[in-house]
Length: 521
Image 1: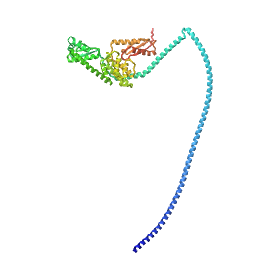
Image 2: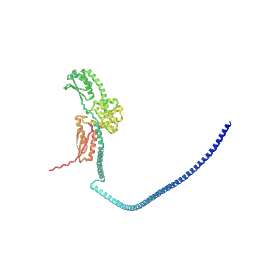
Image 3: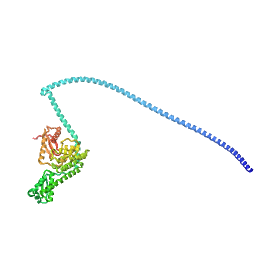
Image 4: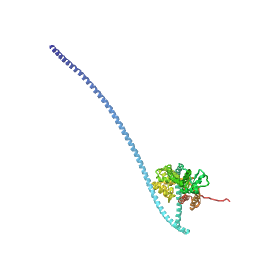
């Protein structure tokens, strides 16, 4: 126990001694560190002060340089402003001098104008006095002229007015000629190009039909069977078809004659069926003819639909399709009307496309323009009037109706498409070989052309040439001058249009020439 206590006491004494020793050591070390820290702090402060002085000097120098630079810039700007002001001052002085000079010049001009005005007033008074004298002299001279010539002043005025009117006519004719020439340089050339392109792109064949049809027979013995006992078969056939049957010496053929192509076609098909069947008697003839008529009605519709398909026209009323099909068996001057209608549709559509118009509507108008010819033989009125009523009845539009009514200039056209239909109709009808006329009609038309041309004053001779496509008019040079020749051509063309009927167009050429003749003896 005591030992333990001693150990504890020794341990306590040792701890106290160790604590005291540690405290002394710690105090000594801390004082050294503090001293070192103070010395380090003093050194930092010294160096900071030294660096601050250096920075201060640098900033002062930079500020001084900046101040000098700004001062130099301000001085330069002030110098430039002084130079500009000096230049403006010189310019203003120069302007002021110019104004002074101009003012002096204006003053001088004003003085000169005043002097000129005074002189003009004096001259004006002299002119007035001279004018009064001249008027008096003119009046005296007019009185003397009236006595000498025996013409009054009013009569002289009338003669002078007539001379002025004649002169104005000549000038107007010359101006009209120049305007037409300028228009022809562009419009005529473009129109020709459009029409030529349309014609070149249309390759429609023209077939010239006659008033007869030939039916081939297997042998001449068939002619007797067609005639029948005492001619009863041929009479029954002619009664049923309305077509004359001509049995002549032509080997193995008979001829059907009739002005109606539709009835003639029915007769031709019926006779071919009877010949092929071999049974020819009145009852059989009537049966075959009735059956053929029904078949022809179907063929008519097929022909109309095929024509519309070829022309590219759709949406046509079924009745109009039937009327179109009938045109296949109608001719005009020997030209097939359905083929003519298809060609007019082609031409009208092509020209409309070149002009930026509605090509579909144009083809429709061209296709239906002669629709009235399918029934005009059985209805009163012209084919244009009949076609107009039929097309209106079956719902065609106003442009198509106007094209039908105006394609022979019966009414005024309301649309460019109507004009194109007129042109296409003339082009199709005037193709070489498209139409034919009888010799008598042809001669009468040419004679009428020459009569129309010679009915005008100043016309010496007139000749119809180019199969009536051109009329050449030779005028008397002392009655018709160059300016009036152009107007005469227009007047003759207008009279031909109003008084004559003809296919296509007729060119009027007026020729004026002067011939001097002398004989060497």
